[in-house]
Image (cartoon, rainbow, N blue to C red; front, side):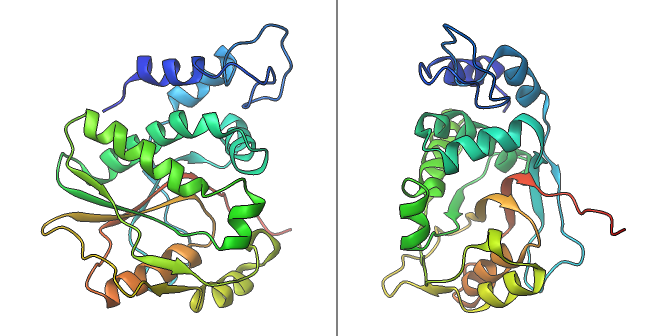
Length: 234
């Protein structure tokens, strides 16, 4: 599934700004989304299981590209918080690799990105997960996967998870999602894959998964770009 040349081409297509998204270094004449060093570090990441401990009820197996650190963290922040939309293509390609690794072989797939609230979408320059899902699906289709992006859920207003502790995340996620009235069913035999950018406690993905499961769309796995690492308590 890995296509290093395609990933580098995606990153190289990003002309401006000149600051590297991965290390924030300013290099005169830089014509890449990230510098060669950061591109190499991103290419070296390999998807791995990333199950939070303790795992909330209803959480499917989670697979992440890497830890929420270094160039991966900085590139995600540049994309989400600073409006660098061009990074959606390489990040979506990396997310496709996570999906492929998590499922283990070509099969029909329904990708379900975690929906944003309207307020979060405005604050983050639009539907950032929707863009990632489209590029993820495109990369998988190029590799021969039958893929559909499905949006059966809507998000209700809730606090931004970055402001909450573990208990707050769980409480906010519990009633945060609803099934759309005319949501189409998943294609018969398709693996339902929940997509998110970062997993921390798993509360959001678990809440999405419980709603999907209650509607007959039980997720097979959750695929994310980054997993936060638990800090040791002093």
